[in-house]
Length: 130
Image (tube, rainbow, N blue to C red; front, side, top):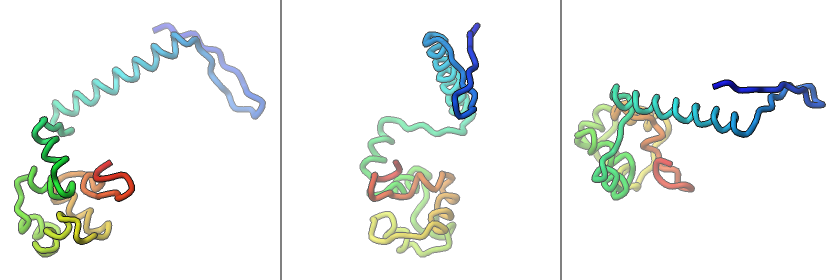
């Protein structure tokens, strides 16, 4: 791509770059393509998980993201509880939304499940896992 750019300085002294709309759109398209290629490569390496339609429906049907991820990993509540250093009943209450945990607990649970903490925390204003 042969992009023609012009550098200008705005009154505050900050340098700015000006280019044609077509060059900007081509640059944006190239960045989008590079990001998509990186995601595909991450999926191929097993670094990024994808969901089947059935798994997506299971995620949406789960009482909490924690319950979904525990089942997806094939763990019992007892096994997850042991890995996180809590009781099975505490895991059951967390999964049902009857109890809340502190960030340190959710970090231990996330590590035991091999997911980011944000994947299992419910944000009550936005909904689960958003």
